[in-house]
Length: 81
Image 1 (cartoon, one colour):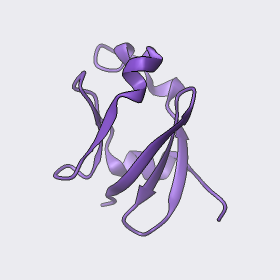
Image 2 (cartoon, rainbow, N blue to C red; image 1 turned 90 degrees about the horizontal axis):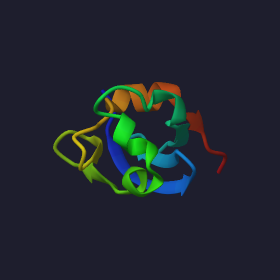
Image 3 (tube, rainbow, N blue to C red; image 1 turned 120 degrees about the vertical axis):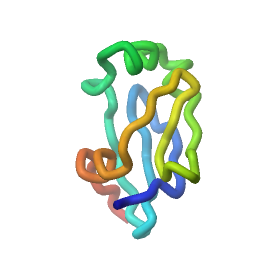
Image 4 (spheres, rainbow, N blue to C red; image 1 turned 90 degrees about the vertical axis):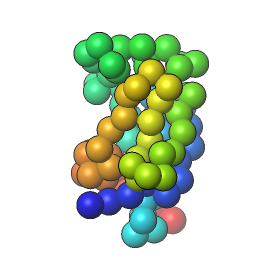
C-alpha cells in the first residue's frame, strides 16, 4: 500500500502528491468530485483546504472526504524531474 508523504495545490482541481517511494505525481480530481462527501470540494476554497493525515497516509479534507492512497497513486500521472 502506498502512502502520501507530501502534497501541494497546483491549480483547478489538481494536486501534486509525493509518495513514500519518492515519486511525484499529479492528479486532477475534477471527475471524482461527485457524491455527498465529495460534492462540497467543487468549491475551490474547500478543495484547497486539505491536509495529510499521517496515520491514514493520505490526503483528507475537513468535509470528511479522503481518497485511498493506492487510488491516488494509480490514477495520477508522473511528474518529470
